Length: 155
Image 1 (tube, rainbow, N blue to C red):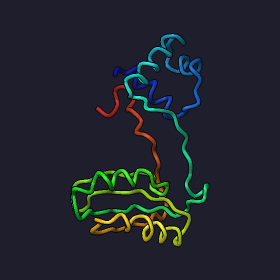
Image 2 (image 1 turned 135 degrees about the vertical axis):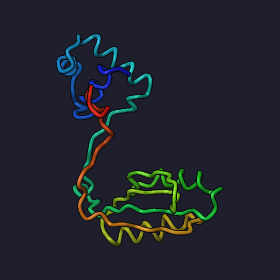
Image 3 (image 1 turned 120 degrees about the vertical axis):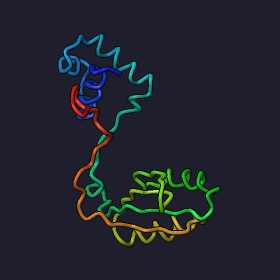
Image 4 (image 1 turned 90 degrees about the vertical axis):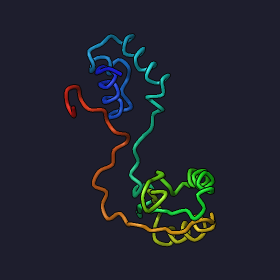
C-alpha cells in the first residue's frame, strides 16, 4: 500500500459517501485510475465494506459500558466468541491478554436492559468466571476505523 492508497483510505474513512469523481479530484488522479485503486483495495480486503456512524444514545442505547469477561473453561472460548458476536447489545468484542479474556463494548437502553443482558444473556452462557464493568460517563472520541497517517507523518 503506497501513499496514494493511504490517501484514498483517509478520504473514504472520513466521508464514505464520496463519489469516485470527487475522490479522484481530492487525490489528484483520473477517475478511472482512482476507481481501479479503490477496487484493488476492496479486492485485497483492505476495504472490508462501507458503513455509517451512529450515536447509540440517539437510537435508544443511552447506557454504554466496557465489560471485561474471564472464561472459566478456556475450551469454551470459541463458543463464547460465536454467541457474543450475535448479540445486538455488544458493539465490539476483543480477546485480550492479561487478567481478563475478553473486553466487550456494550450499549443498552438503561439499567433494566443491562440487568436483562447480564442475567438473561451473558451469565447463562456458562463458563464465565468473572464479569467486571465500567460505565461510560462521556464518550470523548469515537473513531471507526483507524485513519492511516498522512504521508510523512507518524514516522
